Image (cartoon, rainbow, N blue to C red; front, side):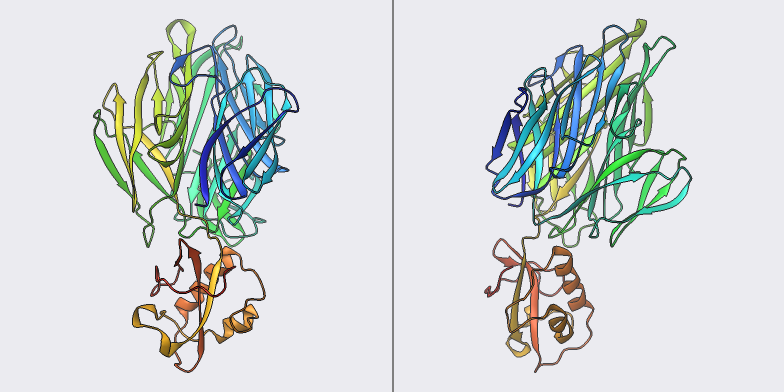
Length: 485
């Protein structure tokens, strides 16, 4: 396994560290999420936030906090920082700051950079360092039309952004916060919540945004993932600045599917991959939602949930809801939960509005089961499905005559590739990145002639003791390994 979903508990004492181990690999990228109220299961409380962050190194990481308290001015408070991975907010103040100290051989280490107010659980989804991973800062250009960014270092297969209307390194009231994600098939979604205020700073309305077709609702849509970055269609003149986590190097590119609440308690619904060819059994999944049914901007309540899983018994969700009630009052609730995959909380203070769980992880998607539902309505939960990270390549020099028919690639001589890769016999002289492996597969697939007397290289992804290359014709063909990189 090259993707791991787990949890740890913060140590709120300044300079104390928490060593997280047992992943089975050294991470190269991690996405974090939490609710800082120390309770499992739904609760109503004045001070509940939802936290998220991501990192690709101890120096390239970001944290986002969204908080709204229901006493006094009832102002939403939060922000985004570039010097930690989780930041706790409480009653108009920034409390605990938790940073990534190191990626370790079997996990990672978190350090408390600013003392926290309470202990709480943080969930994470970690990717093997073999994955391509980078975070870039993108600033909207202030004009509409096409705009792009470069400098990623590879072609992304999945992107995530943290959203704040106040940009980076700003903590303030009247804070908007959310997350967007996109795949290379151009499926994309985002969610955000925020509040409106009167002249005295009191909250007057709570809002939620959801889009199943844009990376940043009303502002950006991804139109392509490019060799060194991505291109957007900018549909708003704002100049928001946001960090974007780019990932690549998977056996099969990740795919976003849009699941729906089954709507009947104990009812199940299967959701399948649409774009992946071949389909894959997901080894992990992640999502973030406001749990709505389509592109909406809804008033009167603001709610978000973030969720991740690797199996029906290893899944976590963080949820926050802030409702604007009559008489200018505010009810807040939220929690961190290890019993459901996606939830929503509404105007009942102590119960979920709905709660969905993983019923099964399938060979081409997943099946959800409804554990709780008060209304039976439609509630969309976007889920990004992940295949394993490419661990390396396997190169075997063979004679064409020795290939069985089901092992013959659709392609031609690879002598040019042998020169390009500087191979001597079957011993590669360089380590290839996942992107380079994919280029080899594409070249094998596009080549046009076969010459029986030429030596050929079968270059493929080595995973689960199988060759799983991108080229058609020898997918999932077991072959004796001679050299593994």
